[in-house]
Amino acid sequence: MQLACRTIGTIICPMAIGEQKSIKIQIMNKILVTGANGQLGNELRDIDRSGRYAGRYAFVFTDVAELDITDRAAVRAFVEAERPAWIINAAAYTAVDRAEEDAERAELLNAQAVRNLVSAAEATGARFIQISTDYVFDGRMPADRRPLAESDPTGPRSVYGATKLKGERYALGYKRSFVVRTAWLYSTYGNNFVKTMLRLGAERPELGVVADQWGTPTYAADLAAALLRMAAFCDEHPERAEELFGLYHYTNEGIATWCDFASKIMRIGGRNCTVKGIATADYPTPAERPAWSVLSKKKIRDVFGLEIPDWKESLVRCMTRLLK
Ligand SMILES: NC(=O)c1ccc[n+]([C@@H]2O[C@H](COP(=O)([O-])OP(=O)(O)OC[C@H]3O[C@@H](n4cnc5c(N)ncnc54)[C@H](OP(=O)(O)O)[C@@H]3O)[C@@H](O)[C@H]2O)c1
Image 1 (cartoon, protein in one colour):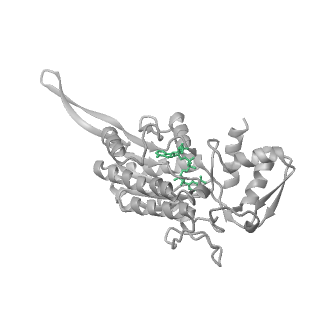
Image 2 (cartoon, rainbow, N blue to C red):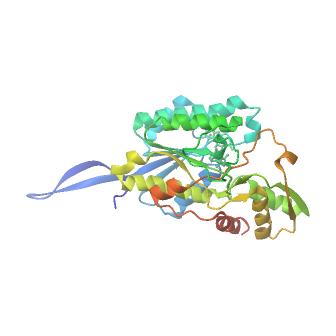
Image 3 (cartoon, helix red, strand yellow):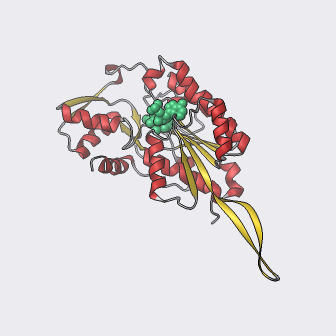
């Protein structure tokens, strides 16, 4: 197995008279993570702390205070100084409802900032990983209720979805990019559906939750592990790396409605709260929610040999940490 290290030079050392030994100097490949204070970024930090990639990758974690990815010159200077082998962009404008009123900022962060990162990656030869979303699809349920493939047509119906699609296109314009679409992300970090349900479940005896939108809850720790597995796979198979880049889907396995998800959270969390299914029409939001967000993981499983946990299993893992 080839380790993810770069040989930066060879020194010929005279060891004894008539004997020479060459020592190869190797440095670990750097992974620059942007938006590292968010859910995904924090899960990447946890993997770093776990030591799983110790000796292989050196992580450089940044959020807006260290590197504002909307600042083109700052991005270029930072990437040129750090020379990462990989850039993982975990930053985004993720407030989907606010984005409807704040399209300019959403465009800046979800599209133009991706262009900044891509251009810095291109200039330095770094490989790039961009995270995208199920919101790039129109969200209509196919007649055969099949999971959406990477090749299915897009058609975003929200500012968030449209700006993320634009970001995808900038990323895919660079031949050393992965774009990984995910959905329904939660984690022990940040604000998310799991934490909201636990709070509401402690306050109310009954809760109405949408039961006509389908998708797959996805533990950000599993996504983080998958992204690093993809990077490591490329570094282990440099001869294949170029053909591997492109668009992938990653969520946990299985299918659920938000109502199923909420019921499971209440059960695991020991909340005495009855969850009742309601219709999307009964819970209007500024941004339209996709009714069908089920993504096919066939490509990512086949190419990288990933084993993807079922959403219920991952939810137990996350909540065990959360409720400790
Ligand atoms: N959350 C979901 O359900 C979901 C679903 C599908 C896809 N995704 C995608 O998955 C990725 C990760 O999502 P997430 O939930 O981990 O996001 P998140 O928790 O909202 O984290 C995003 C991070 O980016 C930071 N950030 C904002 N502006 C920045 C800037 N100008 N420069 C650098 N960093 C900046 C944010 O800081 P502030 O908090 O201070 O703004 C935050 O720490 C995103 O690409 C998202 O679109 C998420």
